[in-house]
View (cartoon, helix red, strand yellow):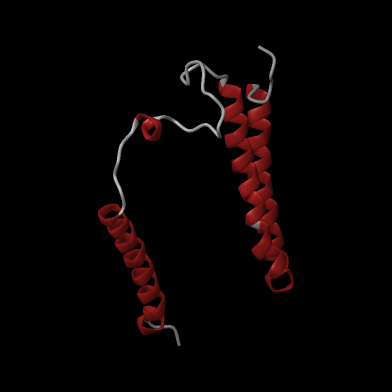
Length: 121
C-alpha cells in the first residue's frame, strides 16, 4: 500500500542532502580565505587572454534552433514509457501515441512554414 509514511525515507534523504550542502557552503565561506585580488576578480576564460566585448550581437537563429531541438528532442523521452508498456496499452495506446506524434508534426510543419529553420536572410 502506498502511504505518506513510505515516502519518509526519501524526504529525509532530500532534507539531509540539502542541509549538508548548505552547511558545507556556510563552513567553507566562514573558514576559507577571502583575499580579493585583481587576479581573482578577473573573468576566467580557460586560460585564454580575453579580448573584445562579451556583449557583441549574435544571430538569434542559433538560439532558435537550440530551443527547437530541445522541444522536439523531449518528445523522444515520452516514447520510452510507451515502448515499455506497448502490449498492455493495446490499440488505445497506439492511437494516443499517433495523436501525440501528429501534434508534433503539426508543430513542425508550422515551424517550417514560418521559416524558422531558414538560415539565409
